[in-house]
Amino acid sequence: MKNNINDSNDILEIYDNEYKYDQENFLNYADKIKTMNQEFERVHGRKRTFITKTYGCQMNEHDSEKISWILGNMDYVETEDINEADFIIYNTCLVRENAELKVYGNLGALKQLKRQKPDLMIAVCGCMMQREDVRNVILSKHKHVDIIFGTHNIHKLPQLINNNIQNNETVVDIFEDGREIVENINSNRKYSYKAFVNIMYGCNNFCTYCIVPYTRGREMSREPENIIKEIQDLAKSGCKEITLLGQNVNSYGKSLRTNYSFTDLLKDINKIDGIERIRFMTSHPKDLSEDLIECYATLDKLCEHLHLPVQSGSNRILKEMNRKYSKEDYLGTINKLKKAVPNISITTDIIVGFPGESDDDFNQTLELVKEVKYDSAFTFLYSIREGTKAANMENQIDDKIKHDRFQKLTNTLNEIALELNQKLVGETLEVLVEEVSKNNPDVLTGRSRTNKLIHFKGDKSLIGSIVNVKIENVKTFTLEGELI
Ligand code: 5AD
Ligand code: SF4
Image (cartoon, rainbow, N blue to C red; front, side):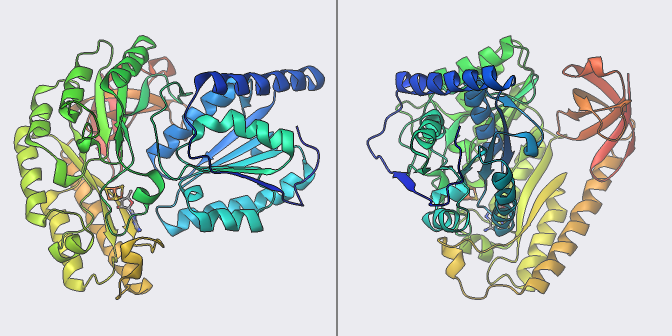
């Protein structure tokens, strides 16, 4: 592919604001790389290999599935051993500082590998790359990186590989915003029986702590026909569970020319034969409609689980976060949901130590957690993200106080989770069997409709099927049972 480390660091930067996806162009470049890879195989007696390392959310995971599909079509094969790979792709996250630092650390470690294997190609993509300051750090300190691209131009990967090979330059290609939804990029999905499906991209909410609106751009919804077609195809290939993805799925449809809404989409997906479970991530409490609550009661495939990030239980902090709902609004929604679907499981995201958070504000979060009784929660220490409004707020919270509050919150959440799980002992739950347990080859793991992780003894031929499991023992994060 290439035969020297890019020490001179020639850089080819492309900021082509006119670029529109052109399938013929995509296929031409893909064909070119495929031919090179076939020649490589003829000479070396093996195919070129790649590995993707993904940081962050499901959106990134799904983007990596698309990258794998593009590479697979160019005759690359996936490897699990980074030391064996001919092409390494880091798909990065910028939501919190620790995810960012991990990427720099891991990229640094690749320098040595690139010295040993000068033909190794390294690409970095995803949310971090949308920031100029990050790109500059990579270009100056990580000169062994060959290709830098962003969140909006995955479909250009064949062209970027080609440019890098032809010119032996670091290729930087970034779209500042998503301009169009590209429909012809498929995904190499990790599982055959469950799949992520994007329904919208971007976010317009500008919560004051969050970098996502700056890295993923403005909200854009996919046309319903394209979503339905993708799910019908998945169903035909044996997929049973789909998770609809978007930063704020409840505002799906707002950018469409018609009045078609998120609940219209749910109703249409509910009709697709073969699909047995529908999930979605993530909802914003301010947009959670009565219509959606009714869907839980009426659509048999919609799973009894809602992930509804609350972030804080203090109205003052919610206002500072620009969340556009109060604690009372949130609790009102939860009560309606529980009335409509008594066994619904509710999970959330909570940030601890947002600027100015007092003991009293934090205690209100604890109170809210006890009132809602979350089945589980993702908890985060507030992390300063340059460029967001909250980064410039005064009263940043001391690390020790943040950690103490974090621990208290975790303890409370864990107690509640265990208490809720204990109520399930003796019940029979419907489980989609996912895989063999990593710790015990006789044990299978799967998820209930309420998204609980369940372990039980069974044969691996059951993977991908839906079975009934009677719950016998419970822990904070898992349930154990017997196949019936
Ligand atoms: N600091 C800590 N947590 C954050 N999140 C988003 N931005 C930050 C930040 N700056 C959390 C929110 C969001 C989840 C995906 O990440 O809780 O819901
Ligand atoms: Fe970030 Fe808020 Fe948008 Fe979620 S809704 S992605 S937290 S800005």
